Image (tube, rainbow, N blue to C red; front, side):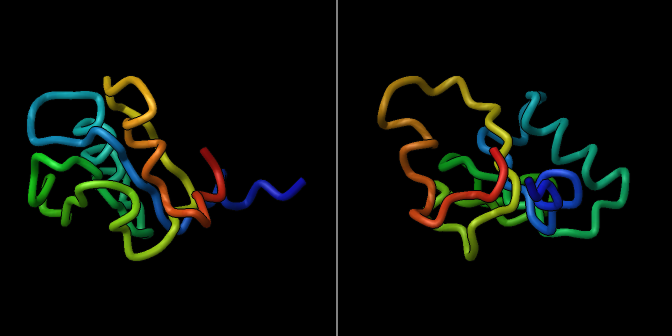
Length: 93
């Protein structure tokens, strides 16, 4: 089993990231603080940016399928963020 995408991701989508003090914001801030060198993709339709990173309305708008997707959203049901991920999907969820 290949786990490189999970343990050494080149890109991470944080679904539910916001400028409010939420788990998603803390994850983005932590990735910045530890010097993560990969691409960080905050996903939340309510924000143009999160901590200086371009924020995407849904995963279908991401420029690539992320290696890891972190779900920090309270959205429930089939219309939630996971139903809008790219068909290629993330490599680790």
